[in-house]
Image 1 (tube, one colour):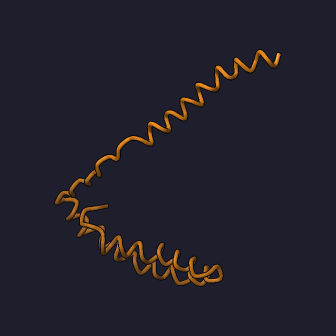
Image 2 (image 1 turned 30 degrees about the vertical axis):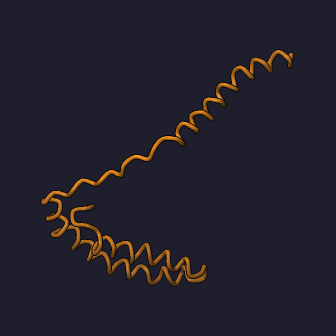
Image 3 (image 1 turned 90 degrees about the horizontal axis):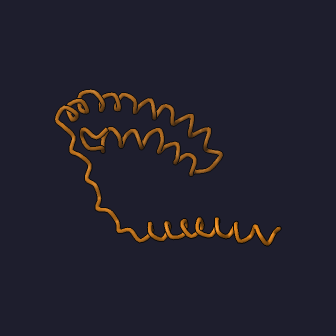
Length: 106
């Protein structure tokens, strides 16, 4: 009985495995696509960014700094990497969002 099931299993699984191998090889040979340029923001989006979003981000920045202080004290026993991760999350990312991102890019 075992001799009869092996050819049947081989007939089912070998094409299936070959399909995965060939699909992976075909995918690896595809050329790189040209980079897609992001669409330019409209004037309305830039005005909304300047009048609403950036002032709110600037108001939230001190809250992030205030939240960083106890977080740094709690994560300090884990090492410097934990404190740097907390600094990145609570201070650096919000500051970059407010001061370095292009106008109208939400």
